[in-house]
Length: 434
Ligand code: UDP
Picture (cartoon, rainbow, N blue to C red):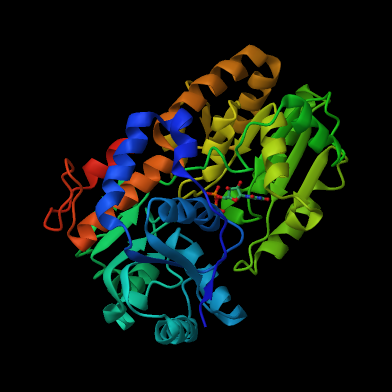
């Protein structure tokens, strides 16, 4: 049985002062002909990671503009999530492909979920590879189908993408964060649409410096000493071990520095605990390294506090689909240092809104510069926030989805160009990311 996710409510009007009156009016106009449309978002987990993060905001806002929208979680057991984690890694370039049995497991769970999926949707939005086979199995259950890819497909394991391709090829619409992620051979319309963060969510709302340091202090951070922070799942692609190496190098120059690695454990990520343990081992008992996860009561407010209080926020990924944590840090006007991979350069302009690095040494050097020169950190952060306001806030993302739904359903709002017959043209939707 697929599980519907219970959601709170959000009001688009609340975003007017951040996003602009005209922009909000445009969204309402786009939504008008879509009122009452039945839309399902289908994903693998309601907890942990970027997909869940996005849907908790996007789905309530879709509801607010009149769409009859639900978010459903597919059914899966450990064998399924083990296979899909392997698939995720292989699609991001890991050499290990799934075995025949694991591909069969993936198909079998997709078949079960396809059978259980209620029908009568106007649009089904399928997120990521875990449920990707649904469209091919039960195309009749929705009028329109969208596959939303959240991962970095720029250098996939060839065997894995070849096996997956027949399942995603026929989706009438697909969405990717970046042009480089679009695999060859898709038949439907390809949209390049980066995701976005919710500036009004507890994770991103304005916290006073006093409140942020008060929360960090409760976790043992000495709030009068400098703090480096990375917020990420414990995953090799996020390179927490490299962050520790960078911190150790900074520590040689700045013995007072501290490091917090904050990472939630996702329910569809069985590897997470192994890597968490490897990270703890790599920290080697250093009392100035704080390794925290959601089982230590680190929720959204705490993540917000750590990001807000940090002197420098790091996202030293080796692969990164988009990296919501980057926009989260920039929105808080933070000095940012991150891996020069995937969606991170989309959000960070080298030397203008942060620094892009390719090794622990570079990461350490940039962090040390920022700690040495607080005015530099402030200037980077200020420009970073302006960039996020323009490109990476949820209302922009909502607008892009509404355009895609309009195309799927062949409706168009007065004064908008969206029609069902438009040709693939990723640039129109990609503009927001330029
Ligand atoms: N996150 C969180 N708590 C943690 C670690 C991560 O709330 O302990 C959130 C983080 O703030 C971000 C999301 O999980 O909103 C991760 O999204 P991102 O795109 O950075 O990476 P993904 O996990 O999707 O690869």
